[in-house]
Image (cartoon, rainbow, N blue to C red; front, top):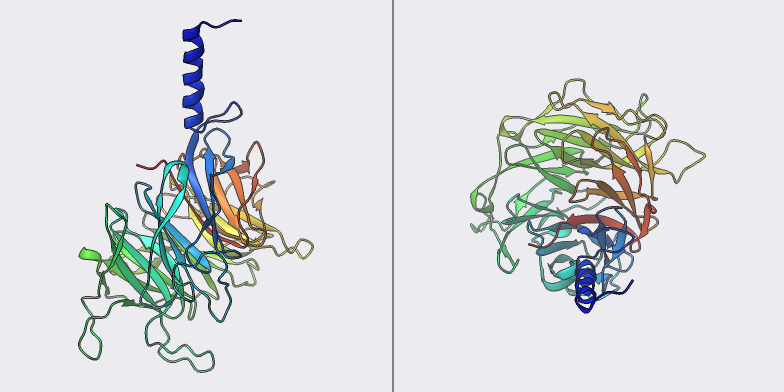
Length: 426
């Protein structure tokens, strides 16, 4: 078949447009971007998410530098223009300074990146939190404030032999809408002994994670004493202490905190007689940021699972997914999985997703974090041990997971920690 000159030009324009949108004959357009942190080389792996298959395609120029050492957490400003990476830095417990260091001698700091066309990251600037060993970041829904969790507040004594006054802190930053730059927000409620305002907000013993939930509550998970420390979100980025302060959970080994609506879910990796693989601890958020135990109490993890470390509530609020790093099956010690539960929207009660032959679902070795893609079709885990990402189809009607049609495992970067997704840049 011969085409006229006009027909050939039209065809060329169609092909050009398809290439610009990331479309190929084998897949669909790019529905979003995914970034994965890795501590082995202090890098960020970047991928485009295929709309029709969920497959991941590497971005141009990736992997990107994390800007510091030991990157452990990342968050994206609403609109998808800026990404922030929390670099824990080199500590006595580990870490290395490989890669391009932009966050000081020990590599600790919050690296700001602008997100360009195709999801390409460009380093902008590094900012310092007020404490030591930053481990987590959380942003308010409007993207105007960034909360950074430090394991050790200024002046604390966390000596392993005889710790005294051992606690962490939250450093609060305001975010410039036009540049993404961070500005420190001082604590207006508490002063130092010399009468000056604190530059941070104290929390509990050795915090590892935090989550905004309910009607403006921020909860930190404290691994030092298995407690939760609450703040209410105030105006101007301020964190206000509610009547209820430190909350005892009764957990043996808290590993994660997540939220869905007014419900909070903690993972307790300590084995019990009736649940050797750990439990999920469900709560509701009450007045004054109190946590009230959900009717029925702790929920046993699924059989053959162990060491739950992260949970994800899907965007519909119907399903809760739990990432398990190991198994109670001694014949398959490296087996990692996702436990899937349905969530009763009225009571918050958890029940296993009815898929007995497949649930829990296998993933790569040592999952750390999970995300749902912007189109709500796919679920991804970042896997620390093998440096991969596992992709799954997410059936919104049943909550069941299945492997992507064209392969479910994608090479990321060594010793992968957390990951994040964003739609197209606005």
